[in-house]
Image (tube, rainbow, N blue to C red; front, side, top):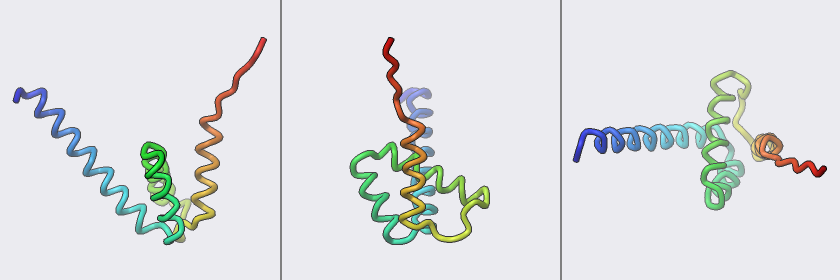
Amino acid sequence: MNPNELNQIEQLRKQQEMMNHIRIISAKLMTREARSRLGNIRAVKPELASQIELQLVQLVQNGQMQDKITDDDLKTILKQLQNKKEIQIKRK
């Protein structure tokens, strides 16, 4: 293997390690119902689940969430993410 391939492998390993760490943290921060919902989302849209996990960790790090994240909290976060991704089509 050349050095470039080794670097890419190392980057992928670090990225996967970071995502696993984020999943562990977010699982500790959520109620059973919220974890179940996130698992369902991950089965259908893994990239959305990753986005949610990152946002959850950021909320906790910023001190915006003191209690465990409930299913209702997760629904609110989902709605916020969906609103950001709305596509508007303007017809002339």
